[in-house]
Length: 284
Image: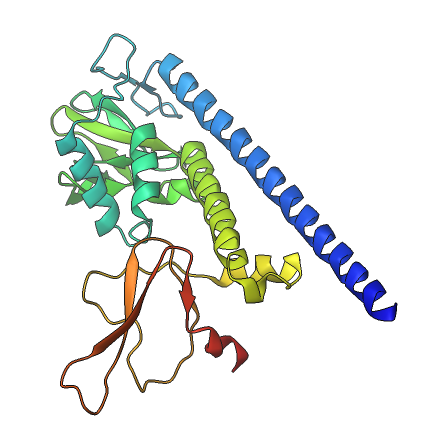
């Protein structure tokens, strides 16, 4: 009878763990829905805005942006523009580690505006809340550098409220793609929640991890890193020390072994999405 009670108790614990996991997933999904709604509202607000560059101070020039459409903003991003913006992100030390999905989401929130000749898009001393992709920088009347197409400037404003230490004005009229800090940070928050939820699902798919408490699974999810491999890359080499555990998020891998009586590697089996290898590294 004692054994039966033990089994019943273990079953109840398992049911409670599953219930807690389902509750957490529901909470994460609700938070994602909230962030989706925030992004939608931000885009609607941008649609209603007048795309006017107005800088504080008596010396600031106020320039009405010459828009690509009658609303003052253009969200129609051509393939060429998408490639230009993506290149600017990849070349920027602060933003180059964004993944492709995050960059695509950010590009979809960016809008284009035209700044007339001589007008300031950034003025020294003003508070920053936007970053820009594209053309000429001056400080104290001296030209510091020329910004070329595909260059980004003002990117610190994406991370926190900063004060500009330089001014940017156009030698000629020029076009900018603009991203707002609130939209940028919302996208990254949503991406982080998606990544956490996906990592937890991958970990729970491994039977030997399903008995771990949920807080442990969450901590493991935070520590997981996504790594991309191209066809033919070696993930683990035979004979090397194992110090990492892998779960396949997408794609397929093959497990091979070099045997004494074979010149080439022998394929033992193949693994695909939600399967794992290297689990012995978890136990030291």
